[in-house]
Length: 58
Image (cartoon, rainbow, N blue to C red; front, side):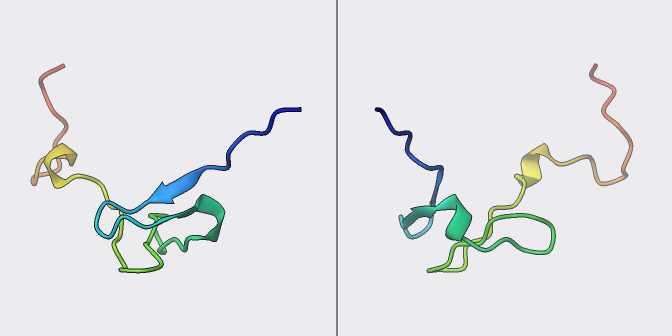
């Protein structure tokens, strides 16, 4: 019988690896590293423009 590995959280700041079910999440649902406090948030380069208008590049 084969087993599957559980999903893990790998912190890019302190290189800790933990089961994703054991790491805390902030009020917006982003993962927070239990060791260093790193919070995985959206990349600011990919966020909407400052004026809030949608991109016209489509």
